[in-house]
Image (cartoon, rainbow, N blue to C red):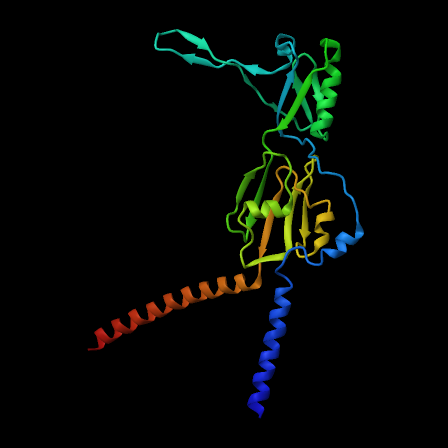
Length: 265
């Protein structure tokens, strides 16, 4: 009877332990709570930060009129004849945003673009170009080095370039092959540097559906996601290290014993 009660207690304990651990596994639990709020949030638009590389092009119906406002570089091609060069099609150079958020733009001079979105920068440059052009130009601003990094308990950690300048936490994890079974979904750390150089570490709980309403759901350029390992991974690591030490000690003892047996014969 006592044995049956003991087995029953173990089974119940294992059942509740399994249920508790499962709650920490699925992403975005209880989505109805978010859906019922009906809260509309503005579409995310990345802001230009110091050390961003920008590609800026100005186009009009008359290419010659827009040429002075495009930062181009002629590429020389060396032919077989000595001292003979032919210039290829010009390539656009990129603008490096300074720590103060400025760029040096042809003709217009220094422009402050730090903290602006892509659309805001385009509107500002378009407005500044009006006195120089007969028609309203098409201005296109792109962030060339928009990248994020994912580390820790993921399948493929690394740094990833984002071409559309918009990525959220779940998309970043998908790029890295998702979390491993050892990843803690309730404590994902986001490391972010502000435009003023201030470092910030934010803890995110991806099991809660309201994460989609968080201001940290969308990642900024150069953000770093770190997935914390759970206790099982830590214990396995300790077991591995302990096993290695024990095997090494056992090997030494066996060698000493063999040496003593040989000496005493």
